[in-house]
Image (cartoon, rainbow, N blue to C red; front, top):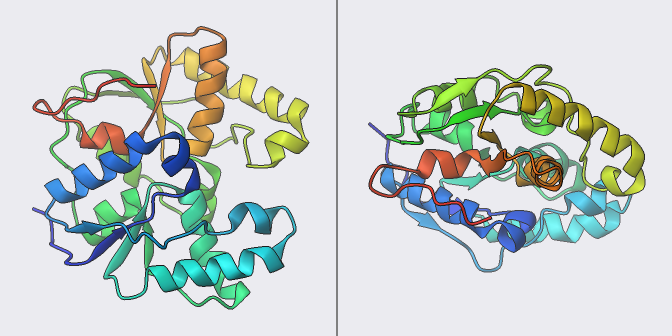
Length: 242
């Protein structure tokens, strides 16, 4: 049974809010199902990761300060992105912005709420890609796999070379397009080798990259954020909208 956390804020992140709003909605449905009251501060801004990673730390600093201010006073802040959470927890203090009690979704579910069975239902064959920031910076470990393994109807298949980068890396994919595409090709081959219907991850940025490649090649494999799988139930099943 979930441990109720009174004031939980959602940080949807720029990419999710702009391109994949269904993921943010899924996070809210999931957390409310588990007993949380979820709020979305309207003055929350970009975490500044793109600016910082591109060498513009001075531009990232006011964004970091604004984000910390927006989420002050909450028991916890949850984001469906290991990449942005890593920025907030590891880089914001270096920018003098202070800290924010922010969690990547799967670590919040397992470590804070103390659940691995979220009463989800997703009757499909699924493989999981651990994104670089969640794996190496946050150390989420097997939390996503434990959550997926408890989903009724879901067949979880192992991904070869799962811990290799998909090649996105934010602006890396723009500045180093040929290298990024080669890395993506390797990742897609490994995904296709699983025979999965869906590939999932904790970051929409990586899923956009992988899913875009799979779609362009008409592979039939869909990319879906883990939040949307965990929010899916028999009463409220996941519906493909992408």
